[in-house]
Image 1: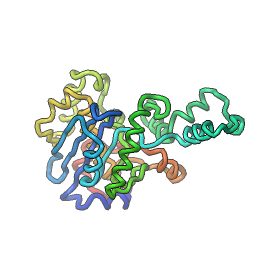
Image 2: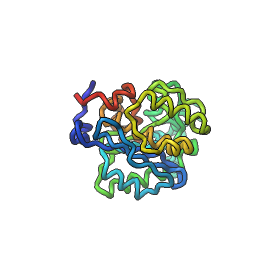
Image 3: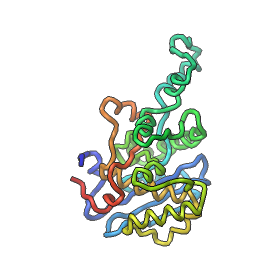
Image 4: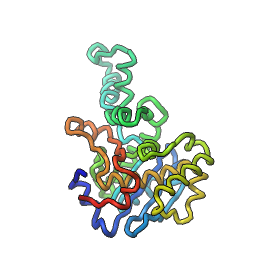
Length: 268
């Protein structure tokens, strides 16, 4: 397994203390969930799961955990930002090489990490430029500023405490069928049963009912698990040629190891 020194500094003592948090972020507090998982014992314990969470609570959590995964794009495509700035300044569209075609529009719609997610999962994530995700990303930008104001450095490429997480893709890469789980409590109940069968070491501390009732709560817990994967280095960081872009646009940490490795595999 690859070793990332910048990740290791947040592990404190792998054999002992470690906390990860997951945030299912929405445009408003309603629909936003926060989960915290304690990995210090032989089991992973869900110590906190809340709905209706505000920015201050999330920013405060960032100061107490080793890794905080946010289910939201942490930035916008470079090409989109340049286009909007140029358009606002009335620059010539010829100078921008604007052809209006679909291929050109996709460069504005998707980040480099979105193309990476597409290559690894076969699915496009929502576009932060053209889908309703943009409203949530605006909130996320303010949230990142609040986190930094509390003394936590934010690197949108994922090196540090904050990391971008995609719960649905994480579940699929761990081998689970995610059909309908975001809209159906019955599908979430079945999926949760399968997750717990694969991860008997996960102690939900009585929060299973909330996870079944709320897709937001469900995804917050999955984000906390995927944050553990990122903290252990079980993901592919942006390649060197895309690192600067990832620090502007964000980078999704997709798990590369099985779910069982979250509890059993030490950092090498």
